[in-house]
Image (cartoon, rainbow, N blue to C red):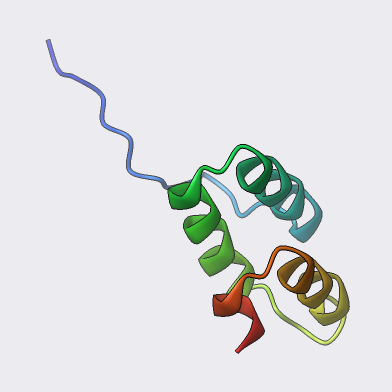
Length: 68
């Protein structure tokens, strides 16, 4: 029997709002690996219309990777 493996891939891209909610939970529960993954996803979501909300979350959580 084949064992399923988690590849951290999604069938579709989550919205910025959903990603930020997941980031909040991961940060609150101090799951650093997930915080890192979500930060990388958010880096790719930065657009003119999403910059403010992503920058605010990065600043409040002291996420250096999203601030630079």
